[in-house]
Image (cartoon, rainbow, N blue to C red):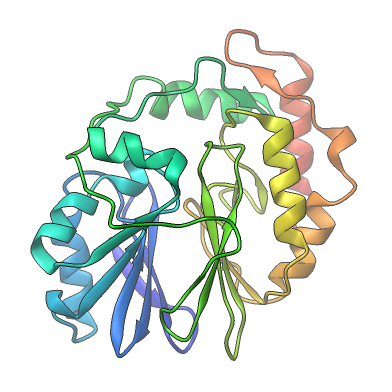
Length: 261
């Protein structure tokens, strides 16, 4: 568990299996909430930068998976913050159970193994949380001077990324991709082709800094790295179904690692 400042007013919160992000603009906005039972840790991290629970006014959920929405209900109850998310994911968060995809896709064998080890048998239950405001593609939220929501389905149906312009433009990419072994494809996709198009969409934005649900933030030149990685390279990637590991997958993933972008 740690917090680091990555721009003048954005902090990265490492919560173990996933990251959350804090925008400090007099009042606080939290992007994602980690797994269930992370609310105490998050409030400790806020206290470490001199902030109180009632400074937190907005919670933006990128998607419903328990490692992102798990502590939303507790934080909302403690702080009174409003919760925002896409309509396609609202039902799961309010029901308190997030199902896994029937046939997840993987871009390589390493991702398939990560899924089998850490995700396939993980509980899908969270404390149910009421969503206060629905957010759609292109919406500008009047928070911290303006944050644009970008619908990026593929990893999940209603996943949102957030674009935050400022002295350094920041993209919160959610799980559209990750930076675990260098910039790469997400551990799994519900729909790989849709996920690939979402990454092409994100690469059209002008941003310096990229923040991920998994892996460390890229602090400079992030937009150019997205263009190099995700535009024009799809022929290298052959999705691997959950039930069937293809021998070429490992080579695909190793090639991703070696690109060192």
